[in-house]
Length: 133
Image (cartoon, rainbow, N blue to C red; front, side, top):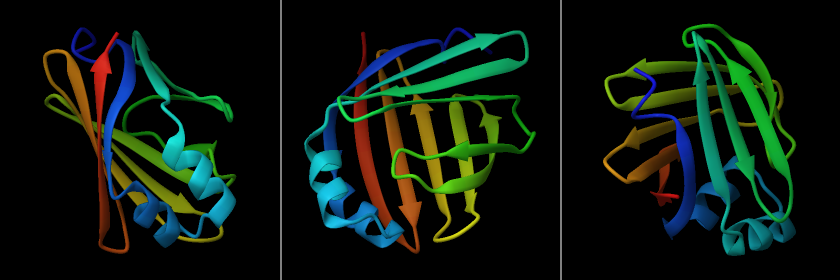
């Protein structure tokens, strides 16, 4: 399971991300910064424990998890969430239940040398494509 997931991926393209962040309730300043950032996401798998790190000029976040087990995470925009990650084939699915604010779902599909991430909140979707480093 680990080989298709491990690695670093750099953002290449982004569609509808500002609208997605707006739906989540992210303020205008953070949205502007978020829309111009080119984050790197890094996944590593060690046994049944995964690490998911997002690195940007704004902030770096890291969440450690075991698929199927709920964890608490603080998002880049500061939301506290109860999150469950699951794996379905070459997809990593992340469901965030916000303690305050809106919930979101992220489906990350790992392909040969890219990662396609579809984010959804209240029916608003954003697609971001990352290239493997």
